[in-house]
Every structure is written in structure tokens, then in C-alpha cells.
Length: 173
Image (cartoon, rainbow, N blue to C red; front, side, top):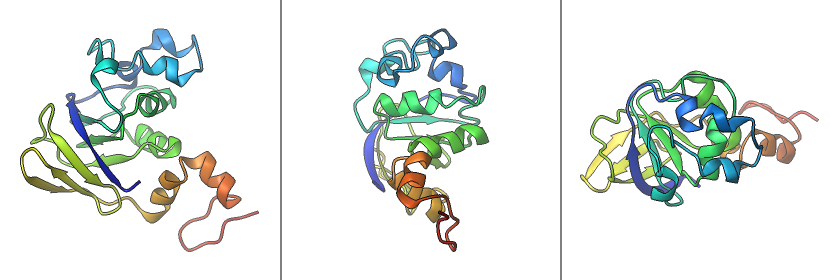
């Protein structure tokens, strides 16, 4: 899980959750696979048909601004996005990604171009732009977040571990 490889699909700054999944769909169904077909369609029609499992959404600053609903990261995950990579994230979106099991990487994305092939080691925070032969260093995720991602999200982590505990604590019953 910590080694990911895919193509970069680049978006700009302030990519909000309503661009990820338009509000006109959010309340029509709870089926994330159905909603995934509409991912990014307001700003990039046909995006769902362009991506392959494991590809990355790459953005500038403030990725995930907007509503705090979990539909946006859930839709990205259902669409097959391997991770979201950005210079910075809206904090609630960042945490919602972790909570649903979608990896996040906070790194300077200035030199990542549309279509670049990226290889990401989530655990170490190393982002290798295979296309350009450049290596970027992101802040690695804390071990507890790596465990949550490995378990498929916070709900699965809690089921598996009988509760939530920080790294140096035992899970509660």
C-alpha cells in the first residue's frame, strides 16, 4: 500500500469539494461508484473516462476547500484515484481522506505536469517524478495515519483494533 505509481492529472489552486463532486449529485444517491462517474465533471468533463486505477489528482494550494462532507474523498477513491497530491490541503478534507482510506501527500507540486508518471512512497514521503527524473520529499505521514490507511480507513481501523489509540497506547475495548 505504501508504494503507488500512476499518472498525474493536474489541477490548480483552491480545488473545492464541489468541483470534485458537484452538489447536484451529492443527494441523489449514496452509491459512490455511481457518483464516481461524475468526478470533476464541472471543471473537466469526461475526467472519469481519462483516469485509470492508481492515477493521481495533483493540485496546488488549498485542495479540498468547501464543504466538510466525506463524499469528495469517497468519490475520488471510488473513481480509482491512488492518492491526492497537493502543496496544501484544507485540513478537514485532508483528514477526511485519511478517514476514508485515500492517501494524501503534501509536497511542492510546482514541477509536476499533466501526464507525468509519479511513483510515491507514502510511508517515507518520497515522490519520484519518473517522467522528469526528479525526486521530491514530502512530510511522511505519522505511523497512526499509515495504520488507518493500511486498514482501509478509520472505520475499518476501529473495527480491526477494537477502538482508536495513539501510537504509544493500546486500543481501548
